[in-house]
Length: 512
Image (cartoon, rainbow, N blue to C red; front, side, top):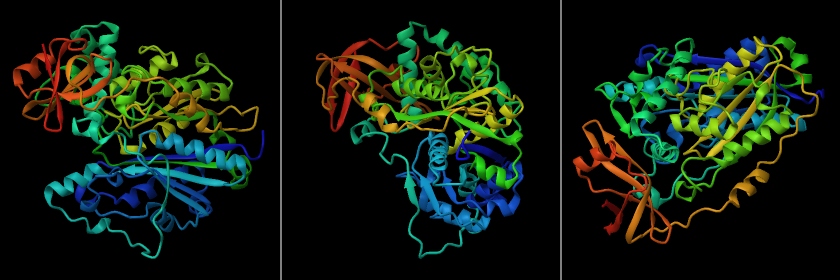
């Protein structure tokens, strides 16, 4: 084993459930997670000062079009955190958006360590929308969140893919929010498999009930409550429909106050710091790639070539098979992310190993771009308790778009760490055939997939992805007729014929 082999030496998580009026600032949340990771590694404050590389997962409110100006926070999170920790990293970065971010950052930092560019790295992130939204709603002050910043510093360097997740054409028809888009995949998957709506809802309840039972035993979970399958899918005042077929309890919860961080070192540095080998967790395999970028460009709405290929590459790099995996955490913003991920990796939904170590985003908490940091932290702790075992972690960004995979173990690697350039897989995915997209379809058409989007008052918008008579793909809305929208949730619409027209700048699909 090379002295340049990267190894995870410390992990830390924090969940704040107190008074929002006194909630930690974003920088404070990062600092708490970082200090917990240092304590876990046993390196303390002095060790933290020696961090030479820092990567912070992007805050949700720094996404394009967000409420950034309404919530005071540091404009340079890496610089603010470095100052708080007393560290002076040679290289520090702030990520773009995406739920794949933490695994992507770990993959990137491990590569830097193997190349000799980094000795001791910290990657950390947080979400604070829980207390932020409560403060805004109650008119509370944010004075204690304002950062003391050096205004002479340049903006932080960014890493990751900065492209928007959808086109203007897609956004105009409602394809610009996860709660609108993931249901399209779910309904397509149900139709492909020929399940009735009732049977499929029962399947979703069984799947995520098992996730909630893991969250109930997770001390850092935002909602440590076990739910029955029936409770998860029964629509009620407290579990209203969000985007058919997902009631509220099947949606990721982003309004949380959580942070997590991971310390990564070279083997040589870990020894120098005196971190016992019983704390070491190795990244044996990893890969990163994105599916065809925009939703309308996908081959179909029930698969993910990027999930399949990043998984295949990570297992090849690790030199093991799926049967050697002991612990699993599949990204779980919505049920279909788990269903597609499991299918692409060759897993059963009722695999006895379980599909989460945290409880998933709807129950353990969905801290923006940082959920997978919690996955990696929880996985590392469990692997230490199972020496020689292997753990699989997946991350997913945008709309089943960006995928990152990692395979971990306390077992020593028997070869140098060599991350394959993501561009190799990406070229293979980008070359895949896909339907032609037409922005102004006219005439006869057929539903490929669909959803009904709800407000608190009830259904208000139908979204249809369809094919015209020439097989070209389009997106359209439906007429806002309550009776029709209600019927769309009771009767399968995939394959239904109709007519598409233009009304202003919108496509409107009218079923026969």
